[in-house]
Length: 116
Length: 112
Image 1 (tube, helix red, strand yellow):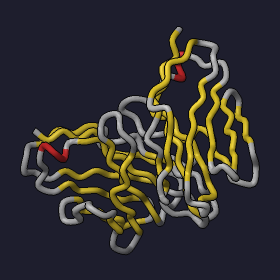
Image 2 (cartoon, chains in turn orange, purple; image 1 turned 90 degrees about the vertical axis):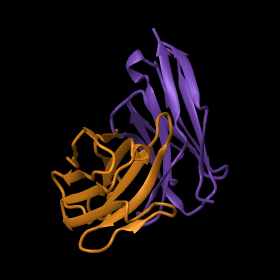
Image 3 (spheres, chains in turn purple, cyan; image 1 turned 120 degrees about the vertical axis):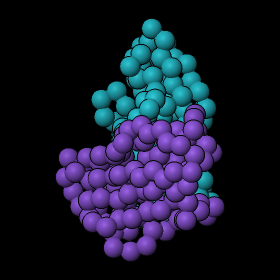
Image 4 (cartoon, chains in turn brown, orange; image 1 turned 60 degrees about the horizontal axis):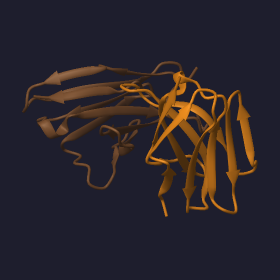
């Protein structure tokens, strides 16, 4: 149980275009999801907290207009990288928290974004 | 106060040996301490977790030791295997849920 599916696993896009990454909780409802960015051989950096039915909460230094987050249902959150540039190339990972009382965060398999 | 410091950055262990990774925290409001295992190109997977009301938790070859007074916790991998070669992250979270604060990660290599 507590499976999080992330899609796509890899994406290459041209500079200036937008890319959407999906994160789905498959067997539980997630009122809160988290989006992370990870650079090679580095730790996970929390970008934003996605809240179902309300605006996402962004961490300091993360451009909310660059990284659009939508959490329209209890099982789906999306991250859209707008007007992507090569410096946005990274590994993006989502995480979801199963129902209240269970502290075990489950992570998606990640999305490798390459902007050329 | 929100930091979790992890060491070593990298670790090489012979097959069958014990791998030990240490973490330290400052925020006494943290009450959940998980360890994650991450293989290249994959998301982190929960390995084992502990709460501060116990000093040790064991699951198979993996053991967490927790020292509340020192604000330190460690992961011990007994009988390390080449398949254990991965990056390991400790993390901490405050009460009633919230953000996971990750350590810097340890790249473990188990040599055959």
